[in-house]
Image (cartoon, protein in one colour):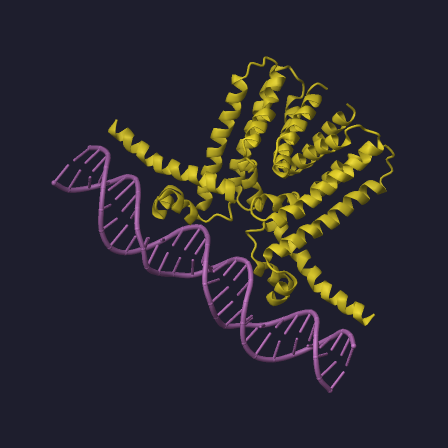
Length: 193
Length: 193
DNA sequence: CAATAAGTAAACTGATCTGTTTACATTTTG
DNA sequence: CAAAATGTAAACAGATCAGTTTACTTATTG
């Protein structure tokens, strides 16, 4: 019990740093953010940061993993909580989820996509952590398409993912969810084809 | 004549720097590249760089403009040179163009998209230069859709652009042009709907 | 109680960053 | 020819970067 409290205490500092790193990296970019900015925002010492993470890169990987955990769960929950019964309709709820985020003011895009862009061809481990998120989302879509007995569900899932990622980028430009609604209607068409 | 030579000489140095900056930024990222790397690659002095550009940001804007000039022209030419006569088929040649690039080994994505990601919410002028490219491409697609008397050609052009940009991202992951072919087939379906 | 783990503060290293300055060379052009 | 434009080389400024080190504090736990 006391041992458990200690373990929680350890991961509390670690988790606090990951969350703060996630927030700052998300809004400010990766190369543009120094470790000092994260240290200062938490009040946790730099020494402690480097006890938990071997490098800035390690902290970024942890932040990408954290983003995946909360975002994938939020999307999966959003679909499962819906009253829709057609699995294809459920799959396309990812667009509604995204529209809700954008309408709530999140214009920072996909954290994993941003990380992958900044570290393309430069940090294999970061890229791999980002791919986990994208592949999991593709898998989630594919699962619902398979439930609908759709043939070549993987190809269709990839096509939906491309519309989804394109919609993320475009909504950053328009600063509203209009392109997301267009992306969803395009996805509907290719699903019923 | 001599005056012209001088003007050419002036812009030769400038152009050389823009091209070199474009190459290095494209492969190495923006924040990750110091101006010294560009200076060293050209043999042109730093002083001269800062006579032509007020800041690193100015050089990035020039590089984005340069990318737009060559890329938009290359895509427009690729379409115009084709023997296809259906305007919708012509519009969808952007996917073939992209597939050709990726098959030739370009896995660096869209230069403008990368720049916009790194400077989102941080450098309005860079973002604006990037938007010029994306909007021009959207306009090009829309032009061909209008020729085909397609109604709501703008919405359809946006949907195609989202597939296009999603395909760029996804092909970076697969390192091949397979997702681009999937994106094109999805675009075909929504065009014939 | 004593060992151990986990923490803090702050100076420091050595590199790199953008941008400036000084001093000088070359070329163009009125 | 002389002025103006264009260029080079290289040191420099001042900030910031990732990461380390030293010296000290606190809390947990066998």
